[in-house]
Length: 132
Picture (spheres, rainbow, N blue to C red):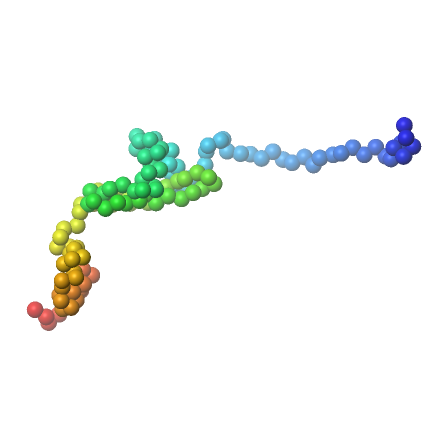
């Protein structure tokens, strides 16, 4: 052997032993108060693609409004807050507002300033005192 190699002390490479990480089983995400889209789909008996569509495009309510299901991303997975889901389902069932509650834009444009003021006050629940 070569003399330079023999003079070197025997250095073996040692690797630091890292403690093993305890990991969750694959596909399991901790969701306190949250539902993964796949869990929600299973719970509702629909396809995960349907739940994804509710989050992206929304769903038509009984009143004809398009309501989007609010969702959040957690480490590459999408989830829905349980309270937000309950609120979303409640709002889906709400009936359409009547014409008296919400005047059309065309009707608002034809209103005089006094009528518009009264309508605005009525909409926010302010009683007009002293006016007939």
